[in-house]
Image 1 (tube, one colour):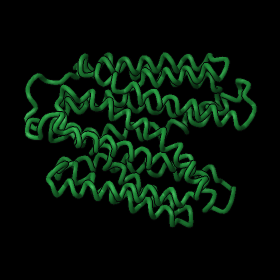
Image 2 (image 1 turned 90 degrees about the vertical axis):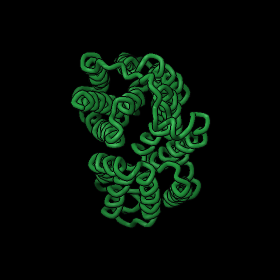
Image 3 (image 1 turned 30 degrees about the horizontal axis):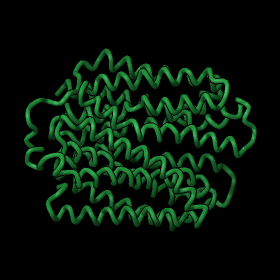
Image 4 (image 1 turned 180 degrees about the vertical axis):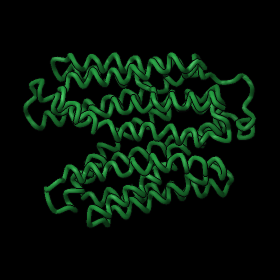
Amino acid sequence: MGNFKKNLLICWFGVFTTSMGLSQLAPILPFYIRSLGVSEYGQITFYSGLCFGITALMMTFCSPFWGHLTNRFGSRLMLLRASFGMAFLTLFLAFVQNVEQIIIIRALTGLVSGFTSAAIVYIALISPKEKATYALATLSTASVSGNLIGPLFGGLFAELVGIRALFVVIATLLFCSFLTTYFFIKDKGRANDSVDLEFAQTGGLRQNLSLLLTLFALTFIIQVGFNAVMPIMSLFVEQIHHSARFIALWAGLVVAASGVSNIIFAPKLGKIADKIGAGKVLLMALAFCAVIFYLHSLVENIITLIFLRLLLGVGLGGLVPCVNALFKKIVPQKKLGLVFGFNQSAFALGNFIGSVSGGFLAGLYNIEFVFKIISVVFLSFALYFAILQRKSIFA
């Protein structure tokens, strides 16, 4: 048990530094592109979006391949590959001379990435059955907290030492993930040869194909829902604040609120899921998030919006970790890497589609409409999962 906790802590540190390192690009990439000679506003926004989107797009196509290699060679090797590859490529960002080089490096970053998905597989394999959801929920807080702290640290550090020096710092953080994995994680993170009894009770992989597709779709929908509002959140804050004063500060508080509550409540919900079942917690979290998203469309002041974002973070803590726990329940150990690879593709594609669709729908209708659509989609999945619960599936 002590070794399990040590490995969970190391993986948490690796996911945190990876998420923190990569999320630092958010506030400074448009300025970096402008410093390379791109002066027109429309081109800056286009290239900024392309540089972010192409990484997720490459992850969508490449994640199943890395998942397959995880099955063959173990999670530890994939953790080392991803952390070293991202560190090496991020360092190159400090020396680019034009925006085309940034695009190429970001595409290659998406090609070699996958530290978080490899860490999920590793923890899923080594965690005791009675602590599986708690461990996966704890690991999920690393990504959330890294994404929360990263933009703030990146913007501050870029102001102090410059953007190119910041990329060196990011590369160093990613290399720290490589070093801690190399020196402190000795277990290869490979599946046992023995038959998984719980899997044997639920049927073969082909028999569970419809269940797998349901979980893939749910991962996709979760990411679409949460990312659809991110590009337009600042505009929504401005709309209900009715003032340009401190708008950036308020927008930052609104975005950070869901991350803070998620970090606090995700492990607690993981412990509950280990006791009553991940499926039950997932159903309640879907219904809860559906209600909270709808209430977003009725907000008229900043304080209420921050309160709702705090509640949304609680609901998020019961979604992704429980989905991952259900994968562990219905997938044999030897196939976990491949399945989580496909799930990572759904995750990345949801990020990409969500970011694009949210802005499009807000422009076509309004921001409140986006919140209502997300609410309807989450409620639909909650009703579907309620039916599965009655059939004793995903219990």
